[in-house]
Image 1: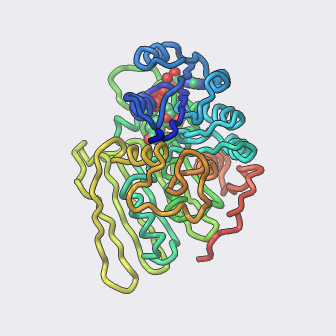
Image 2: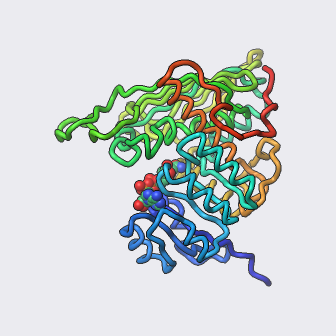
Image 3: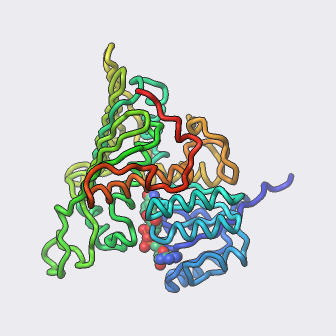
Length: 400
Ligand SMILES: NC(=O)c1ccc[n+]([C@@H]2O[C@H](COP(=O)([O-])OP(=O)(O)OC[C@H]3O[C@@H](n4cnc5c(N)ncnc54)[C@H](O)[C@@H]3O)[C@@H](O)[C@H]2O)c1
C-alpha cells in the first residue's frame, strides 16, 4: 500500500512554546509529517535543537534562506509576537502554508498586511487560537449557534490571572509593548477571538481602558513581588466595551493579579442567558473541579445545567485537540463547520474551528483599539484599523 504523503514542516522561534507544544510532535518518526529545519535568532537555542533533532538550523529571524533551501510545505511560527507578521508574509510569498502562534501580528496594520499576503499567495494561514479547541468553549459555541438563548445581545467576559502567571509577563519579553503589544494584544487576543467566535460576528467599535494597578516597574529590591523590571511599559489591567456589527455588546476585562485564574462568562440573548465559569487554578492555588458547568436559563422555562468534563493536557486539553485538527486534518468530536466558511485549502482539513488570518486580524484589531482608545479616549472603529481588508462578510452583520 502506498504511504500517505508526508508534510514537511519548518519552525521559527525555538523557545518555550516550541519545545513544549510543537517540537515534541516530531520526536518520533511519523509517516505523516517531518521536521526539516529550524530557525531562531539565538544560536544557543539552535544548539539545543541540533542536539535533539538532526535537521539544518538557521541562526536568524529571516526565514527566507531556510524556506529557499528546504522548501517545506508549512512554517510553524513560534517566535515572539513582534516577529510574526514579517515571517508569515515571507512564508506566504514563498508559497508556504503557515501555522502561527497567537497573536497573528503585533498591530492591526501588520495583520491586514498578512491578510493581503495570503490573498496574493497560494498558501494559507492558520492561527493557533487554541482556546477555541477547549471542550467547554466548543460547547458554548454549539449552544449559542443552536440558538438556545436566541440571538446574543450582550456578553460579559472577565478574565483573571494568578499573581505568578500575571507577573511573569512583566519579567519576560512581553513586558515591552514593542515586543508584545501589551496584555491587550498578547493575552487578550485569545479572549477577543473567543468572543468574536462565540458571537459569530465581527467587532465594529471598541472603547477601552488600561491601567497599571498591581505591578510597579523599578529597581529590584528583592523583597517586593509586585516590583518588576524598570523597562516594563505594559498595563496589568484591561477593560473594554466591544460593539458588534449585529448589535451585540460585549464587556471585557482582564486582571493580571487575582486569587484564582480563569474567567466568568455571561451571554444574554433575546430568549435567555448562558453562564459559565472556567477555572485554570482555583482560589488559593487549589486544583479546580473536574467538571465545568454551563447554566442555560431560558426566558420562558426552567434553567438547565450542562456539565462538561475537564480534560487533561496543556491548556485543559485544548492544545492536543488543536494540533490533531491542524496538523493531521482530523476533526475533534462534535465538530461544527466553521460558520459556513468555505473549506480551507492546505494541510489543515477542510472543516473545523480553525482561526483564519481574517479571524486573527480581528482579534489583534480589538486589542489595538483598546490601546488607542485608552490613549486618546472615545470609541475606535475596527474597520478603520484594518486598511484594505475588504471582507466578503463585511456586510453580514446580524440584526438583533
Ligand atoms: N497559544 C498559547 O497558549 C501560547 C502559549 C505560550 C506562548 N504562545 C506564543 O508563542 C510564541 C513564543 O512564545 P514563547 O513563550 O515560546 O517565547 P520564548 O521567549 O520562550 O521563545 C521565543 C524564541 O524565539 C526566539 N526569537 C526571538 N526573536 C526572534 C526572531 N526575530 N526570529 C526568530 N526567533 C526569534 C528566541 O530566541 C526564543 O528561542 C509567542 O508568540 C507567544 O505569544 C502561545
